[in-house]
Length: 292
Image (tube, rainbow, N blue to C red):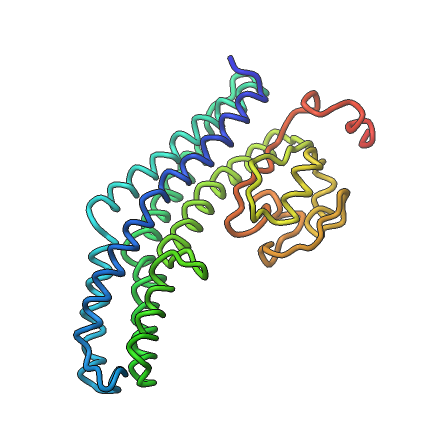
C-alpha cells in the first residue's frame, strides 16, 4: 500500500501528463487547417489586393467553415478525445487509492461513479461538434465575414486567420487555447469535486494545495503552493487573498470564488492544482497547533 504522500503525488503527476498528452498533436492540426483555409481564401473575389464586399464572397464562408470542422474533427482527433476521457476512470482509481490510505475500507462512492459519467459526457460534447463549432469554426467564420464586409486587404485577412488558427508570437491558436482549457478544467474540476465530496462526508478539516507550477502560474496559486497546508476555517480568507504569503493579485479567479466554492474553483480557469483533504497526521505539528 502506498503512503498518502505517494498516492497524492501519483494523482497530480497523472493529471498533468494526461492534459499534456492530449495537447501534443494540436499544433499539427492547426497548421494543416490553416494551409487548407489559406487555399480556400484565394478563391474569394479579390480586387486590387482587397477582398470584395459581395454576396458571392459571403456565401463562400460556409464552405470554409465546413472544411475547418472536417479537418479538426478527424478520426484521429476523435480517437484522441476518447482516449483522453479514459483519464477520468484512472483519476477515480488514483483518488480512491489515496482516500483508502487515510480511511480504512474506503471505496468509490456511488455519487462519484455518476459524477464521472456526467463529466465524461460533458467533456466529449465540449471537445467535439458543438464546442468546436462555437469556439473555433464560427469564430473563424466571423473573422472572414468581418474582412469581407470591410473590404480588407487579402494580406490582412490571411494574417488574421493565421493568428487565429495557428501558433504565433501573439497566439497559441484557437483550437489549442480552447481544448487546453477544456481538458484542464474538466479533469481537474472532476477531481476537485471528488475531493470536496469526500472532505464533507468524512468531515476532514485539513487540506493540502498541490500541483506543479508553470511559467504563467497565477500569483494566487504560487502563494498557496508555498503555504501548502490549509485549514477549512481559512477558506474564506484564502478565497479573498487574505492569507500569508499574500498573493500579488487575484487575477484569474472565477467570479463567485468564496469559502463554499474554493475547493472546486481553486485558482480559476485552467488551474491544474488541487485542494485535497488530508488527515490531521498529515500536517506538521507546528502548523496544526495554531488551530487547536
